[in-house]
Length: 124
Image 1 (cartoon, rainbow, N blue to C red):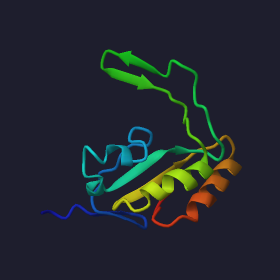
Image 2: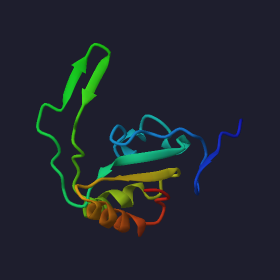
Image 3: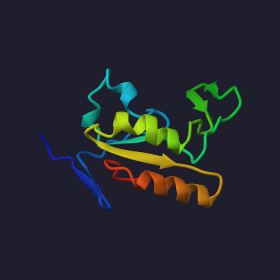
């Protein structure tokens, strides 16, 4: 089998295939359908400092060539991620990359600082 490994900065990946944040949840949702350990990296759903409700409905619209969505980064916040999500995904055998978001630079810094304390999260 061909060596498809790539390195982006300090992040070593077994191949260049990564999921798009928000479209693949936290990765675990797809484990019954594909071998998620074969993906080079899973970019998990956006995580904010505090719980975020997201955009009002409707959040999706059909177009002639597909669909558009604007969920608005709905999530339960970084502390929920650390307590409930992280224990379920930390041992997935691929790069788990956390997408952080915020309303102010301080939100990004605090959220990233909390995520940075976790093991097996090689990139934020």
